[in-house]
Amino acid sequence: MTNPHLIEQIAERVERLLVRHEELRRTNELLAQQVESLTHERDSLRSRLMAARARVDALIDRLPTAASVLPPAEKEDL
Image (cartoon, rainbow, N blue to C red):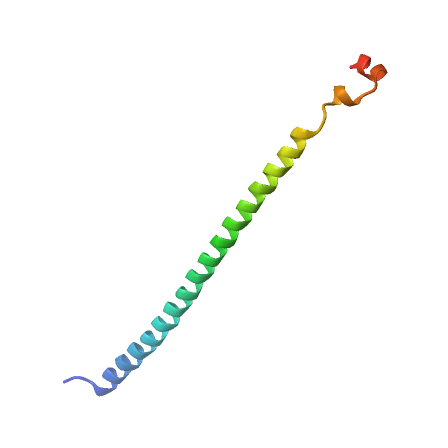
């Protein structure tokens, strides 16, 4: 015959497992949302970095070369 006490213990463990499963499911959902949010933020920051880098490169390209800026006496030393 089955022990009623054993059945109660198993039922309690099953209930605890179900509660823990739900907690983990919710935690996983929150973590997935955080990953998605951080991925969007990373992509946005990467895009802004690339745009800033392009602007800096454009400014560097507009700078005069050292030879065109130096006075004639210093150009002879080069």
